[in-house]
Length: 351
Ligand SMILES: Nc1ncnc2c1ncn2[C@@H]1O[C@H](COP(=O)(O)OP(=O)(O)OP(=O)(O)O)[C@@H](O)[C@H]1O
Ligand SMILES: [Mg+2]
Image (cartoon, rainbow, N blue to C red; front, side):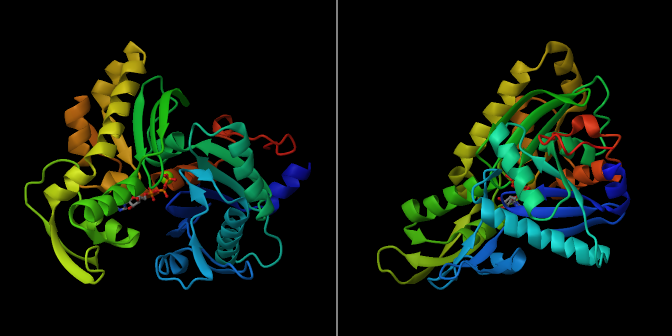
């Protein structure tokens, strides 16, 4: 009865709480928030100064008493209180968008990495409930990504999803709405940035920050040789003189800098293919591998994976929104998808 009453008041929302980016889908409206998962905090007072894009802009440029924090690390909540603040900010924005003046009891569907422990899952639920959600339901991100891509996941056929995010790479084979084989790696797009910083420091004796490393990766980074050579001018601090210096870097240099983490990803994809039941391997050969997440935008990463796995590899349309669109598909019809959802609190029964 209470649930029925609540559902008539409630607004259903889908959330992709990512290491790098958080997105919110509002039932009946589509994606309404797409922001960096960054929170700026005043260390002296503990006050939240900015959340999202405005907090990301100050990374690496803050005075001593302000820190820009990413509360989710490798898909897991690393700082509970700040995650809660970030969720509260997103839910408030959603409330404004939904023009709910008084009552706002959102039921939220949140995508989480498939290998989270029970404790880690509870932390996500608790953060959402304490940030103002009436109900929190969790869904495995590869399942959400497949739903976002509109794959018929309930069919007895295999869907191979690789979500290369900022902090985690999720590799999963889905059949009949469940995960048949999966692997979650703590290696993804942000590791490429770290390798680029190391390369500049060790090989070119130039100190650069993470935002610059990310720009370089996006501008000239690639996983497999390109048809056209690319170059980028990079400014940083010369490690020998301590003074500013500009160097030019080529795509081949960046490719070799990130080759190692990429090989871990391709090796894990091959391992999952080996672990997949033979009947489903046939389906994978036929349907191919589908990539999503921001890391899938790295130039020619589909070609590298195709070459290594010998399976046709494609990128899901609009790969960075696949997971949130999937949580949105669920939020449009919570009843229909209840079997896909993880709920630990008994009182949170779906109606
Ligand atoms: N054009 C691009 N080329 C290469 N990498 C990119 C590009 N655009 C974004 N990225 C990278 O994608 C990553 C972010 O992807 P995404 O938003 O899917 O991650 P996330 O969902 O926040 O993280 P996770 O799923 O690991 O929790 C960052 O490392 C970013 O640098
Ligand atoms: Mg993600």
